[in-house]
Image 1 (tube, rainbow, N blue to C red):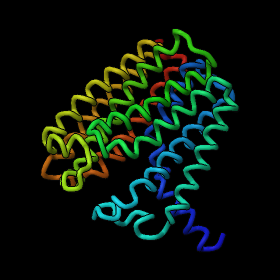
Image 2: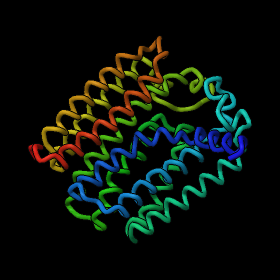
Image 3: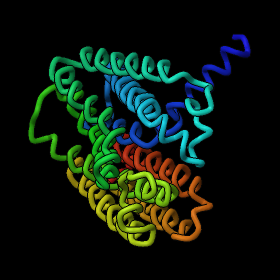
Image 4: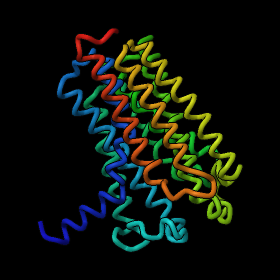
Amino acid sequence: MPASGRRAVRDFGSLVKLSHSVFALPFALLSLLAATGGRPGLGLLGLVVLAVVAARTAAMAYNRFADRDIDARNPRTAGREIPRGAVRPGSALWLSAAAGALFLFACWLLGPLCFWLGWPALGWLLLYSHVKRFSALCHLWLGLALGLSPVAAWLAADGAFSARLLAPTVLGCGVALWVAGFDVLYACQDEAFDRAHGLRSIPAWLGPRRAMFVSRALHALALAGFGGFGLLAPLGACFLGGLLLCAALLVWQHRLLRPDDLSRMQSAFFTANGAIAIAMLAAGALDLYLPISDR
């Protein structure tokens, strides 16, 4: 591939932050494994992965398109791909449309129910980009967007609504609260900018110190959701160990940041939360696949 092609791939990959798929995808896979007793078919597994990655790509590309003017004015985000001219706004919009179509195609292959539910789910993901213009609860909107993935993965396995959906719904609530909690922390970086430009966020509304208390409360509730899933799935000792590791990582995340010092945001945001998602998937998989697991 010529250098220009490699650069374009790199720019588009950076535009949609493909590495951040580590937040939602592990929980979707955890739900899928629990729904199938650890035995999902390769076709089902591949379609769920495709649907999650495509949906997230559509949402991120559209977010960068919708926020291009805001990003250009914000010193923290002025170097993103659209403001600096590496990716044209129209190209980002086309990528969003193509990824959205791919998501709906994957849903169609998963079954009629998944296809019809895919439309409102995609709409919810895309609308997130506009919520911060009118509501400080945008963090919860984002959390729910990612929290849909465990429910959707379980539904893809079952193909119908049933009482079994309680377990992934509890997990989805945990994921929603966890994502909202770390998004509140991330938004502390833009508190002054958001306030000056009429954008809504919990840090801009309450200030960074109170926002961090809100984040801690959301994360405490998220742990309860993760634990509830472990009881309902049901999973055992390995998952409990993963839950304890998750709690330790959340404590570490909050200790890294102070209202007057956000310099370690990269570790608090990506490293800690990526480790949490992977640890929960690994712990659940160990419970499902190891005969010593006490389930």
